[in-house]
Image (tube, rainbow, N blue to C red):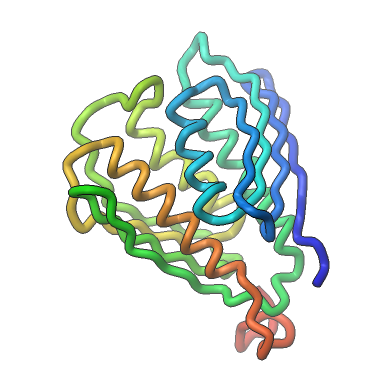
Length: 196
């Protein structure tokens, strides 16, 4: 099997980001976004998706965390798209319903090439550590549109913001691992159109 790895970079007046991704890794990560809670969520994504992930980011945190988190989503999505290549033989669809204490979140993904994002995560507070809760949505929106994913999150229950966010990141990791996995019975992209 060909190595499914990619690197992607983005440099603007607001951020300077480098991402390295291995879809067939072991869950190793090296993360330096300088936003502690965000690094924790990205580590959960890497560990539970078995993706090897390196992210280095210098962002305008003197403004706020928005540009850093959104742009990391854009660059991670681009690296994912590059690592998948022509998407030959991938399972394409993946889903996971993940519990964490009182929280339960479902994530479903279709690597369709047609971006669409839906979520109903209901956070109660404004911040989780040094990360605004509203940036969870902005991050996943950016990944979805940059990678070309149809991505859905459904909150089935939950009250603790930390638990909800961690459920979302881990459920996304598990669903994406399933969707990027190889189905040996499929030759080419798994679509009646012949392309994803």
